[in-house]
Image (cartoon, rainbow, N blue to C red; front, side):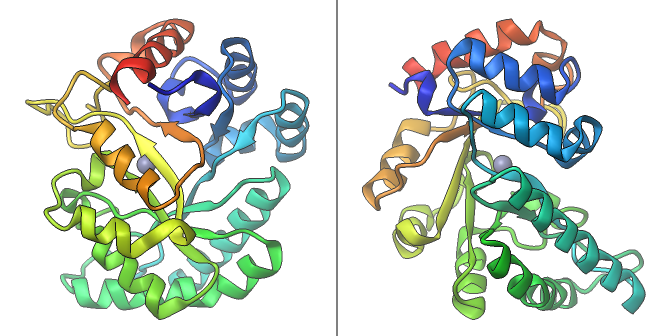
Length: 274
Ligand code: ZN
């Protein structure tokens, strides 16, 4: 039972039909307390204009999606990725985001070295960390499901994210998304290990059986097999009291629906299935 004021809308959930301005106004209209914009939608709106709109509507910015994508095949490519992350940090600060979500990146083109990619991720986060600390923006590593190790995230479990936090120190935490971690036998233990300090964001949707697309077939809470209330209890037991961010990539279903209906549905499901 989660009230709308405790929800945050990840704008990817309605991105096919709404601009960022419409997302902000939609959240306010439905009583949703927070928003988590994607950078392309932020750029289309204009960072200053978005900051003003978000403030005018009193929304909490639970995160900016996303930084990361560190590994590169060349040194110059790696530097470009660092520069892009510094820009993302500045944008996160400009809109008052609670964190910058990092989808850290998979294998660079032509590489089969996961160890090399993981080393670049660690080096990359370390390289931008001072910038993030000065800006007051915590970096939230989001471990992704292992099916994305090739192209999106060589950090595939909460344990790996915790290891990175151990190595990198203050200013680095975790965005925990039930879609990516629900299968993990070590989940309860690693949530305790992360603790309140590291848990910067909590994302929800559901895992559909069968899943028809690796990227674009996430389910509405309650339509799949994840015990979301159980995972919520785990994060709250260690002190997480932030907003709960709904992030649904659903090309063939929810992206086609009227966004107002999507928001009404996710609010209803928050009461029954989170
Ligand atoms: Zn997420």
